[in-house]
Length: 437
View 1 (cartoon, rainbow, N blue to C red):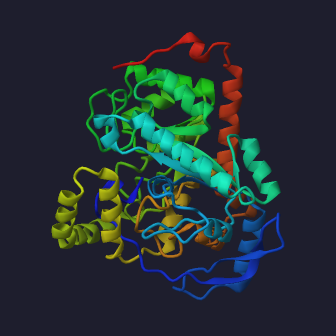
View 2 (view 1 turned 90 degrees about the vertical axis):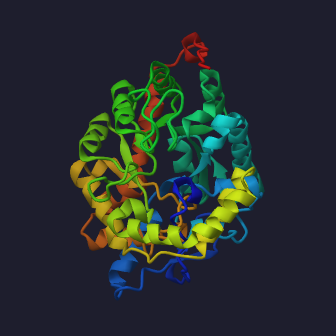
């Protein structure tokens, strides 16, 4: 998701980041980097905080969805620099957050599905990730497997992976899907908010009753390749169909629990249980609307109304340039932040998914730089240690915390690779070059 990908109803909270000791050391250099401070809403338990940092340091920490790839592609943003407003991701902040692996989202706007160029746009975004790794070989490591992520941890580097957001990126072609896999893409979100030619979206038109026959072929080919099937953004019926078809565990790269925030992106309890039975994992989204829609929706509506004239002017000025329109709209929202939710409401979603699906089926897919409004203490990658601290406060064991931070996802990733090996063929797609027009 990207700021303007939902609606113009989010804003960047005005947060001053403070850093505390003890320090987080990287394995490759004696330089020590401080982790972000816990929220200032209540006194911190220093003993528990120290324990949280110890656990966080040792853990493999994976975030499965970050949209900073958009400014990297559009504006050649260098991750070593200061993030351009309203974006918040940088190498320094990833180190502060103890990040082991980041999935860079290849978000392809629906505009490209209707006007053409979706595959080209995806290729340009892939190139931006390659360039980032080339620029910073001491900090970043290009990764395509679960083993690569573990290797990055040992080397003290951040594993850079890629996931396509929006199945229209493959332009209805199995050969194109395979080329993206060969370039390193390791998950694809079957839809964005727009229904495509083979799968219904959660917020889009319902015209296929879930997955079409071609959509089912896409899932099968993703299984064969070892590309994770991502069901964030899809309709409930599409999700159900994907679970019926997939022989590998699926993921929701950035979705939370619908029982706690009733929005289409979030997953209802019956499907949470099915994802658990499938062996998959739900990566919790931090966006405030998906955390607590009842509180945030009225605030967002009021802001939309207040900014309407300015937004209309932007719509007119940049009507021929959807990328620039999105960037300028993001800046407009960033100047009007919503009150941040308490971080406990985010942890409630982890609790709920762990209770309904099981502790082995929940992880983190924050949606950083894809949404403006995040809970206090969880506004960017530097603050991930606060999640560990909050989980400790709720009585989670170190073993379970490490599962949530990354081990659950690694298990799913490794199993998808195993399924692919078991289904490998001499000819790609068992000879299928199927495409639809």
